[in-house]
View 1 (cartoon, one colour):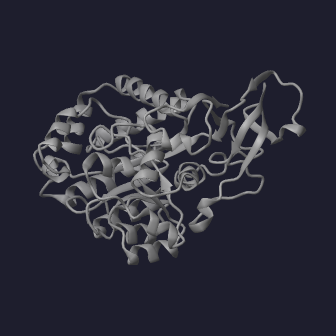
View 2 (view 1 turned 180 degrees about the vertical axis):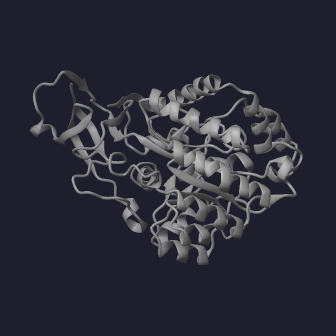
View 3 (view 1 turned 60 degrees about the horizontal axis):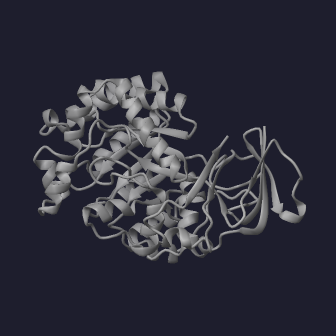
Length: 406
C-alpha cells in the first residue's frame, strides 16, 4: 500500500540525517521543504522532496495544496487510564484551594484511586481508547501512559494490564510507565516504609515477570516522595531493567531533577522550579527536560523557565499531562499555543519540542518524531494555513485535517 501526498505547501521536520534531539539555539531550526511531496509505502516513510522530483502515481493520492504536513506529535507524559472526572475539584480550585490542600482532604490522586478500584478493566480500556482517539484527532501519534491511580498491588497491576490491552488495540505507538509512587495511599500515610516495600518486593517482580512496563516513575516533590525515597525506588526499578521518567520540581525545589540525572532518567517532567544548579545538572546529562504547560495553566502555578533552559543550551520536550485532576485535555496543539504564549517559545521551538524531542523523551526517536526514510508513517495534514505559525496562533481551533498512521 502506497500513499503519495503532493503539492504540500510545507513539509515540516523532514530530515535525512539521523538526529536524536535538538537543543539550545538549534531548536529554532525547523527544516521545511516548500512545494513538496511525501511518499509513504507499506507503513513507512519511503521518500520526499520537491514536487519536481515527485513520483507520478501511488495506490492513494492526496493533494495537500495550501496545507502543511508534519510528523505526528509525541506525547511523553500522560495519565489517561482513569475512572471518572474530577470537576468538583475544579470548583475547589476556583474557590481558592491549592493542589496540595485538595490532596490532604482526600481529593486528587487518592480520589482517582478510589474510583479506579471499583472500575472493571474493560471499562477502563474503552474510556482510554476514547481519549486516544481524541488525542489522535489533534495530531498525536505516540503516547506514554502511566499507572499511578491504583496505589495498591491489585490496582497498579490492573492499570498496567489495561495499558497492555491499549497497546494491542490502538494504532498509536504507546509506552507504559509504572508510577506506583504517585502518592502514599491513606493506609500508608504514616508508614512510608511499608508502601515502598510493597512496591519493591511485590509490585516490581510481578511487573517484570509480565513485561507490563517500559519505564518507572516517582512523584518526587514536596508532600509526596522525597529524593531519598525516590532514589531507593529507582534503584529497585533498575534491577528489573526499568529506566526512570520522573515527576520533578512541580511544587518546590525537591531534588527530583538531580536525582533523575544521577539515575540516568530518560526524562524529568514538570520542572516549574528549576534554577541554575538544576540547569547545570541537566546540561551534563542525556536526560530530557519535559515541560507540561497546561498543568501550570490549569493549577495556576508559575510556568517553568523554558526560555532560560533553551538559552542555556538545553533541549526541551512538551507533553499534555492528560489526567482528570490537573490537565484534563490531550490537545497537543493547545500545548504548542501555551508554549508560545506562556513560555515564550518560538513556534519552531515548540514544534521541535513536541516532535523530535518528545519522541526522545518517550524512547521512540528511532521510529517517530521526524519524517525520515524508514521511519513509521505517522503524519498529519493540516487544514489550509497561511503559515506554520498559524497553528499555535489559532489556539482555539483544531488545525489538523487528517492523520495518517501506518
